[in-house]
Image 1 (cartoon, rainbow, N blue to C red):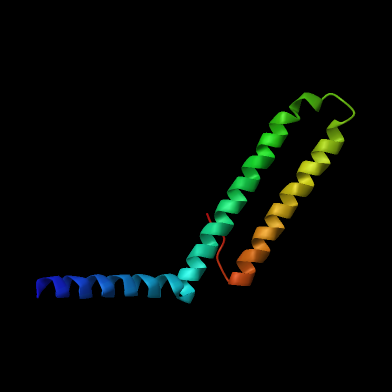
Image 2 (cartoon, rainbow, N blue to C red):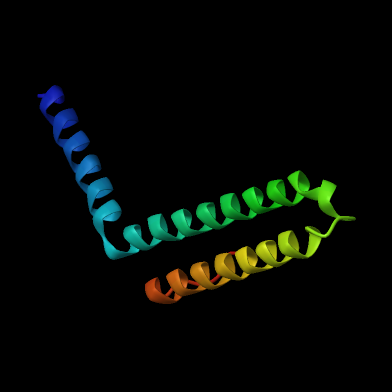
Length: 93
């Protein structure tokens, strides 16, 4: 009898877990995590690019690299803001 109760308890636990994951709130949490992680990775990639192009500071290529990095920063900011707005999420702090 105890084994049956254990199985039923496990089934209920997994059922509740599934409900919370597949609910709108669960989806919003997953999307918020994805947006935050993507933003962080994109920013880190941009910082790496800035370090990799540091050699060009005193060359005629410096304005080109700076413009590219500024454009990329704006793209990251606007893309994450649009995604958060679409999902009605607050910006991560």
